[in-house]
Image (cartoon, rainbow, N blue to C red; front, side):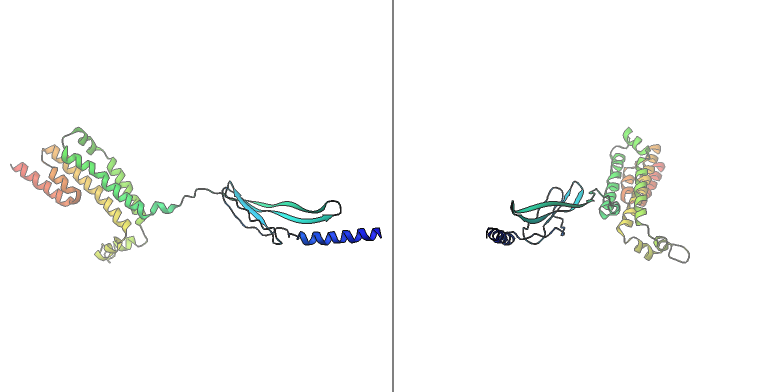
Length: 249
């Protein structure tokens, strides 16, 4: 009778433990929940699995979870055993990726256009307002502005060059430029910017020639230099007329 009573008591305790402590299945679902210190934990103490993924210092840890198992014994009663599981480490590098798109973007083209325009203005200012100063003479003898403008022009020309550039430049059967082809070629902002830098370099070179010729022959050149900035052919023409009138008088 005593043995039968113990057996019945043990059987009832087992049934009670199973009803009070549902079995939690092992972890198999893996979901990333945080990056760079923002680690979250999705805890569900039900029959569904629970897991935790984390990304720490550029390394993503996947499959970090726990197995919750319910066991029962005559001595210890019901207990839950937690076994952590780490399945694998995935190295996830977070680096600074440099893209080449910024080298040819519209913003950069606009910046080159502005820098080229602003870069030549100090030389015109010196030639107009201080033509006889030593700083002006030394500045106009330097080749640095032409080197800088040449580099900017070459860069913009490289960006604007297409397989159809030569065909548009020499569209006629005699290999001569035609106006429709040139107009189509200059429909691009990059091509317009390269043409503007080209004009700035040529105009400054012509203005320097007018300025130095005026110093050599003691001719007034400030009006001609000013016209060379935007109307270079007219500036050269006015210098020729001024030189002729000065010699005749």
